[in-house]
Length: 287
Image (cartoon, rainbow, N blue to C red; front, side, top):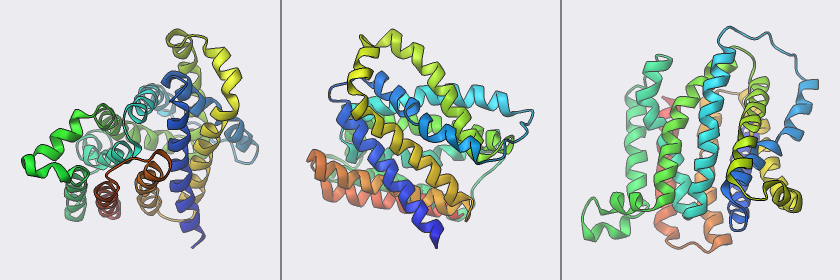
């Protein structure tokens, strides 16, 4: 059961990454924090090259890196904007919509489609998102959805979930044409190189802010790197579906951290909604 411990640690560090990102976003803009997530992960990821066999790269590696990496530059910034503008407890659970969007993108890109159990999972995810704002149901049956989409953070995170449904397929292509660890390192290097000039253009005194705040920014990269390392280790020990299902429990952890650290309100319905959404992800991945 060592894989289970690694998978839980994947979820835990994913949630800690969100907490430290949100804390930094109070004083530092999202472009600097976005770069920090990728840049400060590299010192922990690149040394892994000395412990793995460098794979021969397949024909589709570079196109997967170009498309997947470029889209992940966008999602990294949007993700930081989302948790900056809205509560963690209502924003992070929206990433569980990725499997729903995969119903549209996977058949087109890699020819995969879920069975009946997977479709039940989709319905659970939708119902869970409804539960996040269920207190407002007395204003109308569709009000919880409307209230959710009035918030800037959940709207941006929903867009992130959609783009991730595309990048997930290119991640699969990239891994098939290299190896899991090599792909993680390659795409993080690519995103860092692309993000750097964007940060210089968008952020004022960006280098100065990084040099003075690196002690608070470093944990973001550290927890991001630990998430990837434990995830890849767990995947090598068991089925990918099991690991990803447990990783999505980070949504539940983020709701709890939002309540405990940032004093966010509506903990009961948000925790219930996030739990239902994670169960939906479990149904889809096990299907």
